[in-house]
Structures are given as C-alpha cells and as structure tokens.
Length: 482
Image (cartoon, rainbow, N blue to C red; front, side):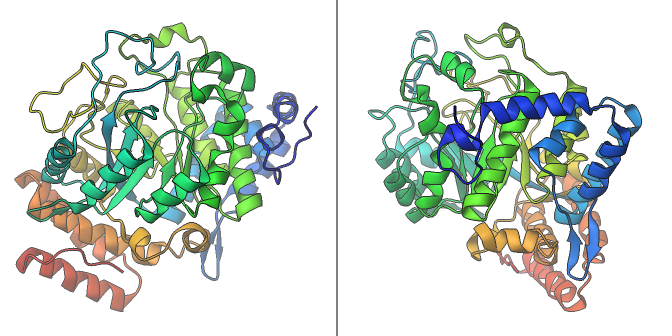
C-alpha cells in the first residue's frame, strides 16, 4: 500500500487514497467541534504584519473540517474570512480573460466531455492559422488582452507543433490598439521536452484539470485514450515545472466524484507543489459539470448545489490564500456574483466554447464543449463588475516583468503585490474604456478610476498612475505598467 508523502513524485503517494479517507473520517468526526473549528478559522484569518497582510493557509485536513461543518454561524464566519483574504491579497480587482478553442479533435474517451472519440454527431473542427488570426482580431475588438487556449488531445491533428504555431500567431496579431499580452495554455498532459517548448514560446500559466483525484473513478471516467493513465496525468505539473514553467493551474470538475474527496485531493496537490517546488498553484479553477452535446450532467450523481459550491470556494480561499481562483461562464451571473465575494479573482467574459466561435456574429453551438450559462457581452460583464465595486483588470504586467513562480508568490504572500497590481489594473481599465467600452461603461469606469486612484497608498505611485492614465486618454499611448 502506498504511503502518504507530499514530497514524493509518485501520484499515489502525494495524492494518497488512504490519507484522503482518513481526512474525511476526521472531518466528519469534528464537523460540530466548535472549539476546533474556531481555532482553524483563527489560523486562517489574515493578520497585519510589517510588510502587509500575512495568511498562514490551512492543511487539507483543517480545511476539510470546515467544509464538513454545517453550523450556520461558523459557515458565515468562513465566508467573512474568505472575503477578508481575497481583499488582503487581491483587493477588489478581478482579472478578465477569454478561452480560445483551437481544435475539438480528441482521441480520448472521457465520458463527461462531448469531444470524446465516440461522439460521431459533433462537428469536428481545427482552426487554420488564418482562422486563429480572425479569432484573435475578434477577441481584441472585444477588448481582451489575456487568453486561455484549449485543444483536445490528438497527436495527429493537434501536435505540440500546432499548439506552438498557434501561440506564435496569437502573439503576432496587432490590430488597432489590440494586443494579446498573455496566452495561458490548457492542453493535455505531455512531456518535459514539450513543456520546455511551451515555456520558450512565452506562455503564461499551464493549466490542467485533474477532473477527479479518485483513481478508480478516474480510470472509469477515462476508459480509453492516453488520458486513461492516472499517474501520468496527475504527475504532469511536476514535469511542467521541470520544463521551466513556474506558473501552473489546478482544478477538478466538481460533480464527477464525491466533492469532499475531490476537495481534499486538490489541496493535497497544492501542498505537494509547495513541498517539492516551493511554489504552489498559481491558479485553482472550480468548474462544475454542465450540459453539453451528448452529455447530461444528471447522469452524474455527485452534483453539488449552489450553497455547497459557495462553501467549497470559500474553503479553498482559506486553505490556499495566495492562489488566483477562476470561475468560468459555465456559471450564471447570480452564482458568479456571489463567488466573487468569496475568493474568486479571475473570470472569463464574453466567452464562446466553440471552435471558431468569436469571428462569427451568431454564437455557434455545433462545436461547443459545454453550454455557456453567462452569455453577456464583455462590455456588460465589465459594467456589472464595476457596478458591484469590482475593478475589472486586463493586466498582464507580472508575467511580463518576470514576477512569476516563487517571485510572484513571495510578493503575494506578504500582500506586496497590491502595490503594483492596483495601479496596473486601473491603467488597463482605462485602455479598455478608451478603445472598446460603451458610453455608459466608459462613464462608470472613469468614475471608478477616480475613486480607486485615491486608494493607492504611495503618493509617487499614485501620481505616476494618474499621469499614465492621462496619457492613455489624450495621447493614445498604451501598455504602461509598474
């Protein structure tokens, strides 16, 4: 039997089934232990230090106790602390991105994904480089600066050379005032050599969802194809970091397996990355199973309701305070609005999950990976965020200034990232307002910028930011950053 060891490079040792089951047993036994719960909450609470706020985070066992707790007063306290942590590390900024689907050719048999090999009635499509350019121009015309590229696993149709060519094409498109400044990559687990190639291509974060950490369920849900190999998939982040990628993003697909099991496994994976590489996950995503072509989410009997989903989000924020947390347009406006207060720091906007969906005026559905619940335009999302006192950020400065991996984490864990991120967010918001916003959004945006500039603590930084924003408005200059 495998022994739990967060420092191991073997999947069944750092994601250890026996340890997870013991954790769930411990959490169930202590879910009404108010004294212990209060101790855990106090540990999670952000503390003011000499260099900003400090949050210690929680172990997978401590966080699992909170997730199991159903005492209303304690749950409300979790939510309050989650919001405090979010504000301490990320402020009221929300980073905006869009997914770009390159190809839905796939040789895997994943039973929850419409791209699975046996689905014969979904239209298969792979973008040419000219089509990639058209998609990028359409995304730039919306106002996007940050993309997450997606592709099915198919060595023949989607080899690493194709992905690299697409990245090069994306970065090469300069349309009007538009530029894609950061390309994150969500493709199948691959080799150290291929991760090194992705790093050399200038990617931002490498994202790979585990889907489920329960090995037996994983193998059942992935019956055929290379993704069937649980260990190879689970150990991918170690290979990515060995290949030089220091920003990686985790996630599970909630609804496939028992959510408490997935939650513990996800946090153990974060602990493993910290233990081995000294850098935890740059992001954690929280997708839920949704309806799609050939996929019925009701077929999975582990679905989670909105209240449970909110508690999962808050507990992740308490456990891994430094990580960026992502919610996609799988979720509707109401759910996204609630979770923004509980720890989410990145959202997609104006998303289309079909291959080649942005360049078409009408939203295509024949190649969609999942139904989009939030179908608002990017401008509507930006306006809504500001209406709810969130600063929409199109910033990519940390990545381009080399503040990645342990350098980003060192700043983030002491709250110092706020000294550059807030003015950067305001400057990129000004770019959006000048180049893409509707009159109503533009008016609300500059009112917000005027208020938020006064919250920058350093006078020199505040004055420089004000001058840059004036330059953006009056001289058509772009891409200022701290």
